[in-house]
Image (cartoon, rainbow, N blue to C red; front, side, top):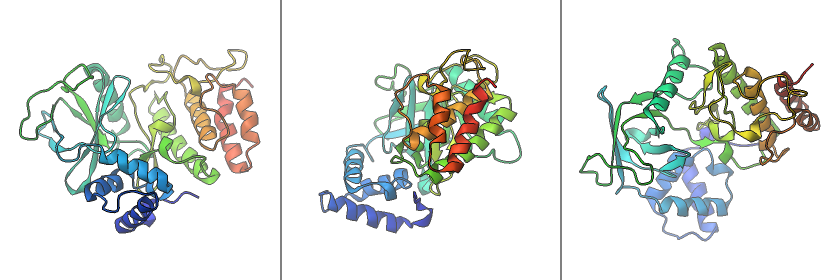
Length: 329
């Protein structure tokens, strides 16, 4: 079973991490700033990592800037955020820039800069639809704040507009969203069947809420599922979300059903509840080690057979019910 740091104190986490790092041959005098960033950004992951994995993460984090590089984010609503870049940032996902920031009192924030203002506004509209009710939506990332103007500077004392190297535009629009402890894709595999079943149930709940709002996520996969410090799952990244029935904006071929119209009863070019459920089924089978992620357009009939062979019958039945809506009959 996977344990999460809701059951650990920060001091306990640091003690475990330091012991494992020294066991792997890390320097005896560990940099406290590096440890702070590791605990802050990877708390859910640390209890699951082997000593050599911890050492690699420590070295990666140590190589990143901690105090010299700063980011300043402004919005016309008066929000001003200033803080250091943190672990694994900046990261480029296609033409989207992600900047992790550490705020006062240890709060984490992810600033997402889509490739165009139109993309930023479209994703903002999705967040607004999902978070328009009196209660927070179940297991969905958010809420998000649309930032109309953002600046980047290598000098904390200067806040000139600067072009981010390699990104090709200035940060004049962005989405500020909560930063969670870990993405599902970074949890060591294979996942325990009970862990995978909990993931499936929580993310299905999130998708059903989106579907009731008339929205399809259209890009459900492990890299878009996040966990907080207690292990609660959240579905995020709504950059490809569209209304049900609309044409897909982005495609992850390994999570779309193959076999053609003779096998698949829904369009694989348009958003639907069936496609979202199928993508979740592929994700769960992948994380428990039952399938290969490199397969494009997996055969849903073959996936049903694979799911039926799972030893955990509750997980088996759950995955099969996710796949069935794309199949005839």
